[in-house]
Length: 155
Image (cartoon, rainbow, N blue to C red; front, side):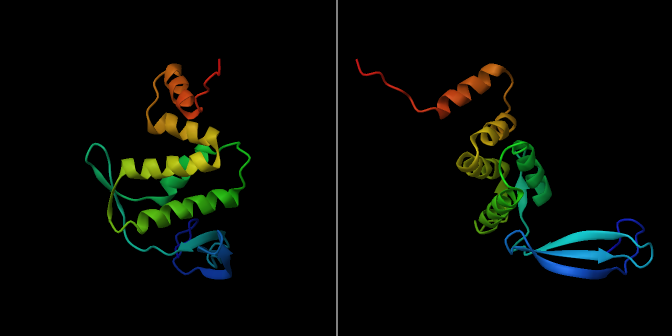
């Protein structure tokens, strides 16, 4: 593993332990050249996924990009970081187990929305506002009103 500080390719593993509910290995590394310490994570990747954007453009699936967008939606919410990591790993496993290597971005967005809706409605609305490209406050109002169960008055 290349040192992120000096570029040395000969780094040493000082400590390894399971991370993220045993779906990744966390390794603490040390660079003998510069003395830098850093952490790496190793995960199983079942297949290389390609995301097909709505524009038709194709790009490699980036777990970090998915994680960033979910963490932004979950910012300042009362959800433990471990729960967020489990959710992200579950989404990635679900995408990998679909049997397809080419996955439309719409499918990924729908899976994320479905998962967020079960965990935290505020994060769900935040993510939806970007995913559905809300342009004004009325878009939020309409979306939230669809979330609320309709109340019928008995008269």
